[in-house]
Image (cartoon, rainbow, N blue to C red; front, side, top):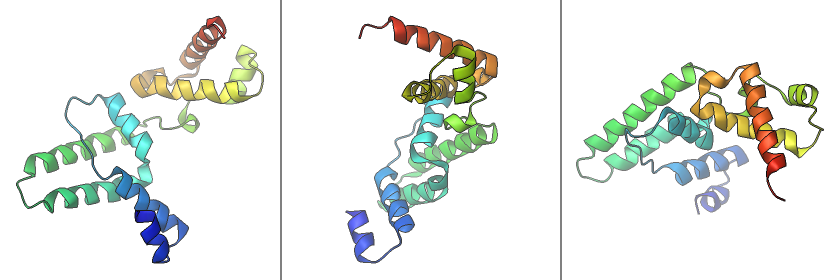
Length: 156
C-alpha cells in the first residue's frame, strides 16, 4: 500500500523502496534476550542504510500511541546502541565481509564453479553471525569443508 501511494505521489524508485521498507519493518519487537547473533541477523535483514530512519520512525510510531511507551522506547535505544557497537566491531553482514572468497573455496577445496560456491559462502555468513571470531580464513575453510561434507553425505 505504501509503495502504491508513493508511486501515485511520483516519488523516485529509490524513495519508494525506502518508504516501503520503513513501513514493512517499522514494528520492532526487541527485548534484551536477543543475542548478538540475533541483532546481527536483524541488521542484515533490514540493511544498514535503513537503520537511522527506521529507529526514528519506530520511536515516533510508539510515541504517537498516546500512552506511556517509555519502556519500549528505552528498549529501542538499547537495540540502537547494540547495533552500533556490533557494526563498529565489524559485523559480517554479507559474503563480501567474509575473510574468504569464492575463488578460495574453488581453489583450496576443489569446489567447481556454480551455485554451490554462493550457497557455501551464505552458510559461512550465518556461521560468523553467531561466532564472529570464526571470520578467519583457515577457520572458514574448516567450516566450508564440514558444510560440503554434510552436503555430500545428505540423501538426495
